[in-house]
Length: 115
Length: 110
Figure 1 (cartoon, rainbow over the protein chains, first blue to last red):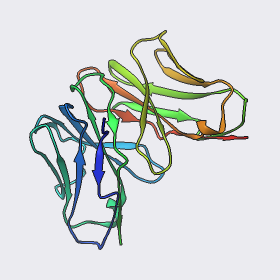
Figure 2: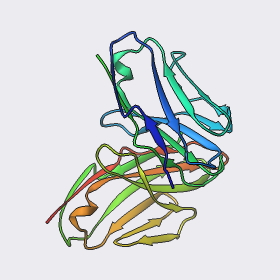
Figure 3: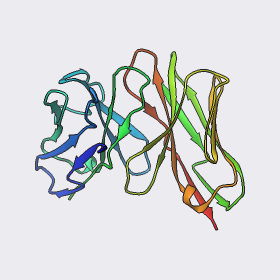
Figure 4: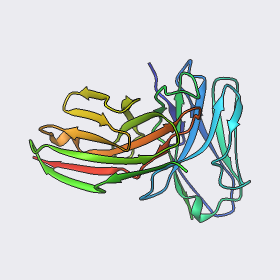
């Protein structure tokens, strides 16, 4: 079975541009999570979806960041007016049911570089 | 605020040289402690979930243990293919998010 799929795998863009990152979760996984991994840092939680609602958005660092999810499927993370400090690997994970202690399964991430 | 501290930051072992990685945590009501393995350029790969103090889980050369304040990942007779960054994360009861440590980068030399 397919795992979590993220696209693009790499994205280079100029400061000030908007970017969209995509995540396809494992089929049947109702919970979906976005994390950010900066160089030398631990993973930082951004947002959690249960179905297409987002009960926890507490990790979004600013109003330039937003995310949406279509049903129990694809999610997109949008960063507007990108800044250099947004450079990081953005990881998506999905799990069967949340919140719970079901393990989260991760994609390979999108490496975002802001010039 | 939940906190996870992993030590050492990096560890170099010879093939066959057993050792342990440490994960110290503070969390208000532990729901679960998770260990992941992350290879360069890849997402974290799930290894174990531990739920309560005294619990142990094993997978091949890896064994994870849990106390009320820390978890250990014991690596017995490691092989070069065990080289990776090992991540520890905690989940608070009733919450969905994971709080991660910065990881331990393990290098096993042949």
